[in-house]
Length: 100
Image 1: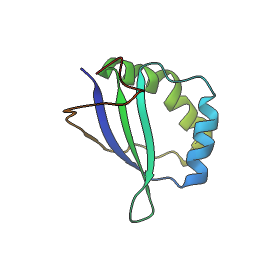
Image 2: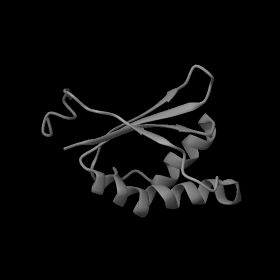
Image 3: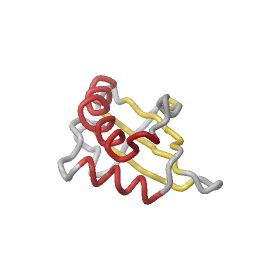
Image 4: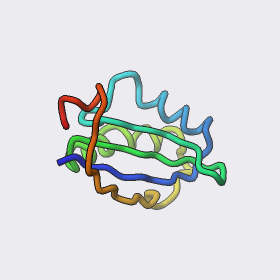
């Protein structure tokens, strides 16, 4: 069962690009889709789909949180931005064909 969610993040595009660079070129294990989109108010929203909750948690622990800490340093918010789960009813596309 896939794990999917949206998350509104309190950063701008240049900060997001620095975080992506800090993650490095290696794909995150278990991540099927990551979209970063601009919200109508100008903020950023992530839409993520993972193979499992466990794969997502491991990626946050091993790669994402360290990259965010490196980029934001003392400016990192005390709490993780709230995420909203998505109830995935169907997935398709070449990137997800092996999972669907």
